[in-house]
Image (cartoon, rainbow, N blue to C red; front, side, top):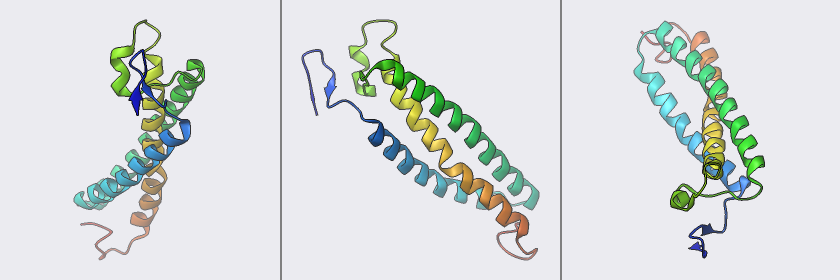
Length: 135
């Protein structure tokens, strides 16, 4: 990856690569979600945490993804990395940097959301004396 004459790093970002990296970060977020769930001791608090995490992940992940796809389509192929921030010269060129950021954040939110909702059901059905039920 080398900068061209205008200082923009080539090759430009591709949607597939941004989605894959977002999914990888989302898988790491699942590990954090499970550890955080186990740190919440009370059964009802644990269920509420999972419900809120799943709901917020769906709402904000979906919103970020929609705005990211919209910005991506508006950019017309001029997609830049965060490292290219210094190459922004006009008021409307910031969208070229925000499009991949919003797409990646949306995927990071959407990947762990179904796992949180699934864990909600698992914790709800857990036996009273199990470690999964909580205290």
